[in-house]
Image 1 (cartoon, rainbow, N blue to C red):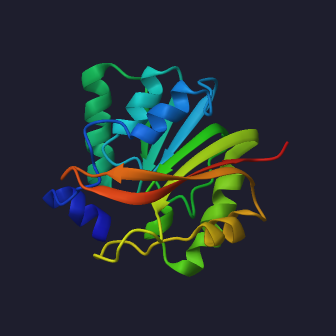
Image 2 (cartoon, rainbow, N blue to C red):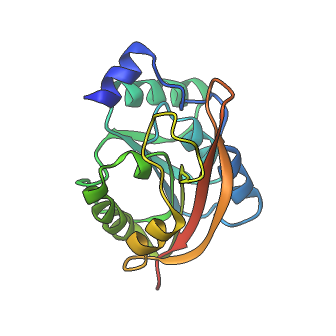
Length: 193
């Protein structure tokens, strides 16, 4: 599996030691309110999940890589954060709990086209009514140097419209560990209810 190999052998430029700036801004501006349960999909080694926990959220992080989950648990223990980390695939995972907030940075754009509507339905299922999700994905404005397929605003609208209410799509830059800025979209959505 690609993700496990990447985490095992250290080829993880997306795994920043600092929380994502768009996530930080969303929490500070109240777009994601620190009340209740939060889920990070594709939590990797836990940096963003730990940020959420340190800002009042009760957090669960999921990732398909057992190595990433093990490292996230170690980081949480080291800082005394009460995060839970689980090995799980968002397309199949159906916990009994529902979440007030879901954050995701880079999972959606890594999926094959036919799995994206399944992903949108999974997010809807995992959110409580009135819950919000913040998703970051590579923009179609980013030049094609490799990496995941770029996503257009139109695709985001078409895929998520049947499932969630779109609040906004904004141009942002994701920054990787090589300090490379990647043109991306941040999308804030809400489950009606």
